[in-house]
Length: 277
Image (cartoon, helix red, strand yellow):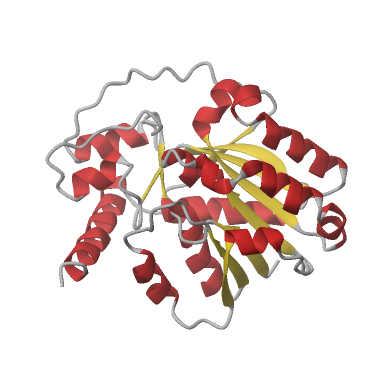
């Protein structure tokens, strides 16, 4: 696999995937999804990628309408996670994505030996049928047509480029009042670089699969919150997750949680300082 299409190329996880895969020599179609209000740091992200011949940016609407050849061994990343956290799932236009792209290109996806990777919030396991039933139906149909599909259910993710919806970002930006969103999972956390490596490890398994990713550090989110002196209440129960046949995959930590947070702090401070001038 040396080619990728990333839906949400300038979102938190999508952008981190872009940078990692470009470093690995991948050719990338970065699909930019306009959410109605532009990302404050969009230009910073474009500058960070720079004039890379392996990166081609395309608008989401244009991508949905364009009948573009699907090249051999393409990895398609579909990031529901970031849009869920921002309470903006409508920007993904799920029905159009399924009908216009996935179903219309079913034969091409199979013939090109492409694989599809869905990134979902872990919370959706609380009610897997109601939360994204249309998507689940599409995944089953793709699998029946011999297309390798991966579904990753993610806890809180932190690190450079974490958006302001997360309480860690707010604390690191010295917000007077950091507010915990009810969309943030507080029972586990994974550093962004470790998440990317863990996801990419699975591309070696051409069969696909459904995974719940968890940190190798027990109480990872709570340890981060305590390091940042955040007040929180563990009022979200999580013992009613509908795991079914989902595989639990432990993600190893490449650094201490405090180092990961300081890396995020340094990056955020640099961004804030640049935007003051």
